[in-house]
Length: 104
Image (cartoon, rainbow, N blue to C red):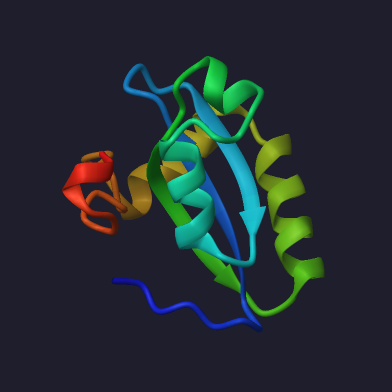
């Protein structure tokens, strides 16, 4: 399992099964992904069932995380797809085994 360090921030991309994308930032990636999986985050991700972690990166500061999130959100869809493909060509759910099977 991913080890979380409190002085790090994460930029992440979630996808639905039909590849609707969502980009976000968090200090606690495991907790945030779990919230998305359970549908506890109201709005876009809940409405479109966007809950599969397909990309993430660690940043050293909140400012760098927010800057990177803004950068990615400003990209074309094609550029976002290339970013995901560069590290996760199969679009596997990177958090598939982070949680108990009973919670899935």
